Length: 412
Ligand SMILES: Nc1ncnc2c1ncn2[C@@H]1O[C@H](COP(=O)(O)OP(=O)(O)O)[C@@H](O)[C@H]1O
Ligand SMILES: [Mg+2]
View 1: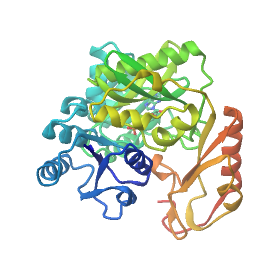
View 2: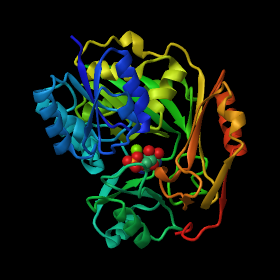
View 3: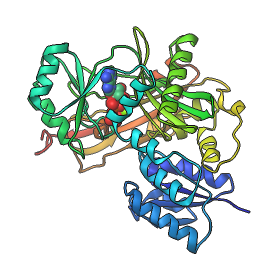
View 4: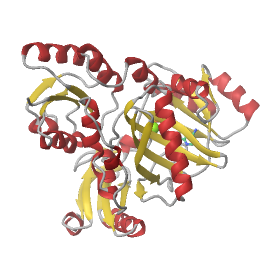
């Protein structure tokens, strides 16, 4: 019998995952609020429900399973909606993360408290209720700090605080990015930043996703913490890779993931690996669907789908089969109104360009870069080595021009 998989999100970054599920012979239901969601084109059944509305999606899934056919698994692809996935899983009795794990994954304070209880190294942190409290923490503990919303994503409202940043402004900016109006501060951890993506199979863990994150523009965009891509394979030693990977896997277990994916924001500090946060889902940004399989030959999305269906997954397929150089870099055009995108032809067809994408088009206004959603586009490149992939991505970002003219409102 064909199995049915429910995929939460039909966004453009979910498309490779939806296609993968189809290749695996599954019947695929996609739910998304946007009737024009690109993923709908590849789905067998489409359901209009906001990915962020856990109750509505769970209700729609229950109705679908009663009226149409049983659903055997639920997963999100490139969408940060653990509560929606957990609620669908619990109301249909499917494998997957629990509502408790989803709650920990959606609340950075609760997650960090759990890390402390589980002895997972993480930055010192505190909730902050007011600018006055922020100032007294700074006075007591000294700078630098990071202030961030407890409940947001995409680096919205994440600011590095040093002596040049006004704490009153930082507090109000950060809380303005928090849906629940809650912010926290953390010690700023120096050291190489790494994105990990692991598969937990009971007490075994595998971390095929391991990217060195590029923060070369951190001063240019300060106090906003803007990442400018990343590259594989990592420059870290085998021993460091292993310790960061083990820590990411342990952090996933600490929030209650038993079988499933854990995505980590990790820093290798002077005193060892530290966890900034983990997520109980596949990553976006073409990381889980494209960059990891390209660099390693590991079918991470396929493994995640099998786990979502409660099927047996062998660890053998989760260790990198090889390492190819893969890099991603972002476009940061001058703020203003977009006139045109030039010099694309040379790169669009190049065999070493895996994917180029833009989040803006002619006529759009580009404002200042204050979080990851404000980046204008990206390029993903391949190379025999990491250095070759990076060089190619940097060349593409240099040569392809998103031309802008000064526009009213662009500096708002
Ligand atoms: N305490 C910290 N020390 C060093 N870097 C940090 C710290 N907090 C956040 N960052 C950097 O900023 C990024 C965004 O912060 P994060 O807490 O992951 O928020 P989001 O949910 O928006 O991804 C992190 O992935 C990390 O690269
Ligand atoms: Mg993060």
